[in-house]
Image (cartoon, rainbow over all chains, first blue to last red; front, side, top):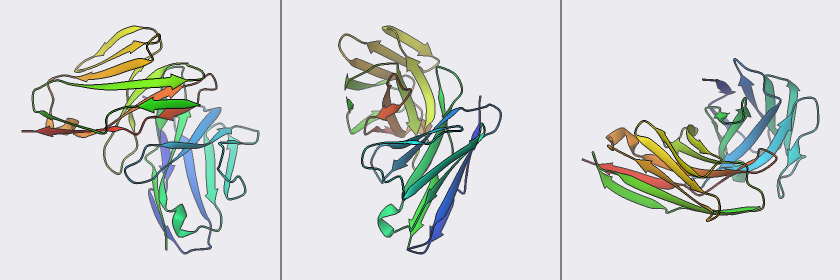
Length: 114
Length: 109
């Protein structure tokens, strides 16, 4: 099946710094990628929809200036958490859609802000 | 938006069958998905229903009734490795997935 690679898998950063997370579709072109956040023992919450060559669409309550999304090519989308704070510590997961049926998820990134 | 409900926890014995129910209220429906998620890992795709009826895939089956806003995931011949969280997700017309809170299934020997 299609593979989505997410990097890094874990990152620890200091409060106030920025962190970039990459999401790559390895063997298919993804015009649309999605970014989710998952807090412990909770389900995935959609943060934004990333469209190649255009601005991302953010869900209600998600700060677009804090969570910068860039989808510069058909195989790469990046999420940058700017000026990270401890409350941003979470599990961030991307997904990419190849066909009608399935959405493939990256491995996820565990972000810890200290 | 979507409102998706599924039980929080279920426990079953190895070799048994477990059925996880999911009910949803949606402003737009374009398919229902079931995912398996082990702790600390990303979800993996299990099944997809867009029409009413049963979809069978090995030990896993999924059922959908659009008129009732209802789906279930059936896990047969349970194995210890099936212990995980199972997520019900509804897709809207923009291909966005809304997830339920997940059902933690514990398989006991």
